Image (cartoon, rainbow, N blue to C red; front, side, top):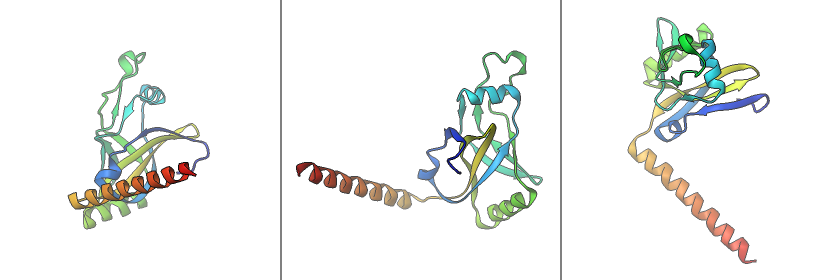
Amino acid sequence: MSAENTKTIALNRQVRHEYFVIESFECGIELFGTEVKSIRKGMVNLKDSWCSIDKGELWIKGMHVSPYEQGNIFNKDPLRVRKLLMHKTEINRLFGKVKQEGLTLIPLSLYFKGSKIKLQLGLCKGKKLHDKRADMAAKSASREIDRALKSRNNKY
């Protein structure tokens, strides 16, 4: 994801803790007008969402887009299944990796790219408990080193 002309709307922070992100992809998302307005207000949650491939099409499930207050009868179900837009060859390649290697497709972030809303999709492998412990130990060690360097620099 390039920094120019993009603005992050929502992040799925828990993914990096629960999974190894092997590869990431950018895809479009099919939305209705009231959903776009709601997303522009930041009323979206990616926490429990995942993606699946059915009949050659890519779908996101579990993404919560709160109903737009001024939307009246045009509001859609907040947890409805939404279609993701990618090239057929990319979808077929992802399908092969998910089926053969036992990987999972999980949304990493939702952002604006120009005036369009894009989704960053991650091809992920689940972490075991010992992997999570190793990551936490590494983070803790780096924090301790940073604290020690900071306190040493403050003395002089």
